[in-house]
Image (tube, rainbow, N blue to C red; front, top):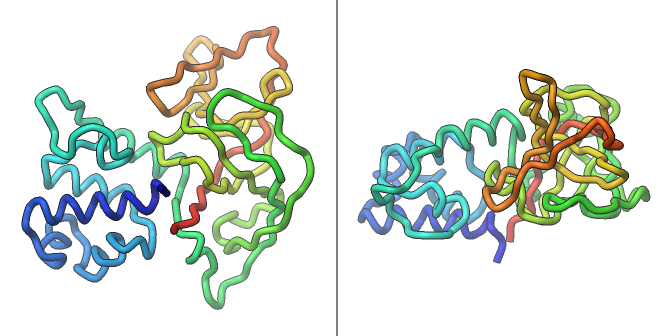
Length: 238
C-alpha cells in the first residue's frame, strides 16, 4: 500500500481516537477542517509543520505517524525527535507534493528529463544513462536553474526524511554540495541518494536517513563525485 495514502489514514485514526470532529482537530493543529478532510482523503500532501503540530498537540508516536510501525501513542521510551526529523525533511527536500497537483495553472513550466532507472535509496547500484521521458515542473520549483533532471527512487534508506520508494526526485545537476544536503552521488561508479556529511576534519560520508542502515564512508581511494542536489520529491498518490 502507498505510504502517502496510509499517512492520511493514520491522521484520520488519530482524530477518531480522540473523538474530534474535523474542525476541532484542525483547530488544534493549525489548519481548517476542510484541509483535514483533504489530508485524510489523500487529496494533497501536508507540510512538516502540520505533522509537527500534530505530534506536539497529541501524544502520538512520530515513528508510527511517519511509517505506520509500532504503537500510535507515545510511551515513556519513545524518542521525541519529530521536530528534528521534520525540519530536515523541509530544509533538505523542500516539498513533497501530490503528483496529481504537480502543475500550477497559469504559471510557466519547465521540461525536465527523467532518467530511466531508479536511483537507489538503499545500497548503491548502477543507474541507467538513458532518458526515459520528460516531465513538466512549475518553473518556480527549479528556481530558474537550467540544469535540472529527475530520477525515480527505489529502496527505503531515506524514508525518515520523507523520501519513499517510487518517489520522483527533482535534482539540480552540480558537482558541489554543502554538509547536510541530500545529494545524488556516484561512489565507485555506483549511484545513490544520501545525505552528505562532512566532519570538522573534512572527512566525508554518505548518510542514510533510516536507522536500519549505516553511513557509507568516502575514503581518499574512493571514486567519488557529486552528481546533483535534491530540490524536491514528487509522489504519486493512489
